[in-house]
Image (cartoon, rainbow, N blue to C red; front, side, top):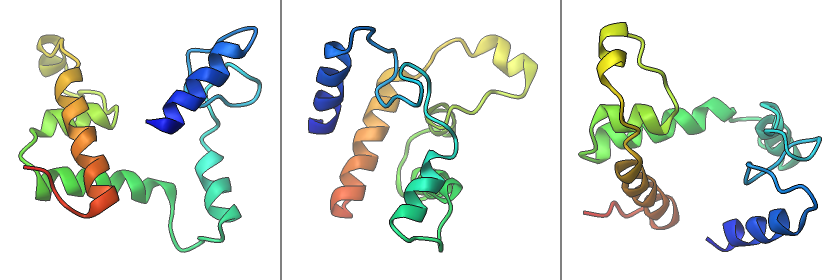
Length: 115
């Protein structure tokens, strides 16, 4: 939360505030998809790839929680491929995604799965 608060303060102080928490270059654009690769290279972790983080999260949700599959998929920003299902699925699961991300944060920080 401290990082998000610091980023908000930086964004609010900018002459042209952005819609993004973490901006790319130029300011106000989404970060490049390469940013995680560059970060991993900088910390000399060539044994892992960015997509592995998403895979680890998805496995955590499926194997360690009781959150529905749809919430996990929404958290990963996956589109509903079935057109009929997509037509009926109008919600964004925002409250459930908040709970899920809180559980994920707790697990990442402590190794404990909240009940």
